[in-house]
Image (cartoon, rainbow over all chains, first blue to last red; front, side):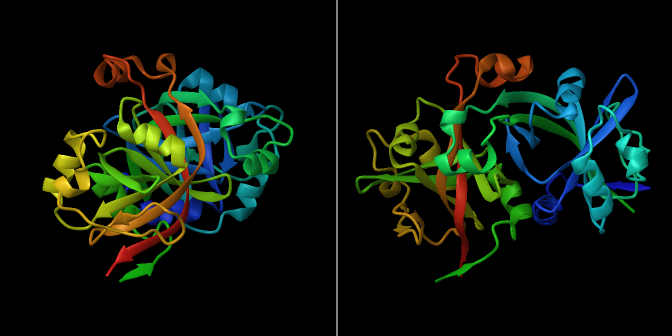
Length: 167
Length: 167
């Protein structure tokens, strides 16, 4: 069971938990993949609620989002560190990460991408804007710290179509 | 008087109030200017809390942020619609908007840009990344709705150096 809530009703918790790990899930031609994220933002842009996710082009998820134009975010309201560890260290190219992490999914309500079952809060998002980062526009210390070998993130801005919590 | 808080302690309220209007303040060579914003986001990127502000290049604020590399955000916790209306419709190029809107400022704690006095919550931000939007990457309906005459926003990502509320 789940309960629909305002996109920002849990924004305090979301920004706090996000930095410790959440799931970004994609679906292409029936194949579901999830990855661990720790960065992102929640906001209001172009008159809409928006979740912004950062994905490096080396990630399997990158090509999945580009193909599907949608993604879901599942924010754990309980300790899921073991599953987050697996989904953050393996690649969906050669592993069924959901099985490896013992995760199941629940169909999306507004989009074909599912969410992680029994987790916490979920956003279903449709990509409305995306942009590759430009290296030279980032502060030098952050370039060195996070992009020593390039592989700059693409920022995927997803309109939040619905937000709900497991109950 | 003000009290320091976690950057996300009021994220629920911030995202709610932001869409109705908040102040983005800049300072260059001692000249303070403020504008009304209704879009933006709060998140965690590059290991840091970040407020992302959107400013069109036609705005006086645009060149001010580019010069100073910093800005403050003041989120009203009370009705300041009259001041928001003035700061959203006049230009700092030819008007002292603060005087026109009967606003006063308080010096920043970490940066030289002040915040709006007696307002609510404040973020002091240092720009760590900025990027002009690319028209063709935005959903077509949003292009038509918000950018019929071009003037695409630049996204200014400001590391939140401190967050505090008036009390």
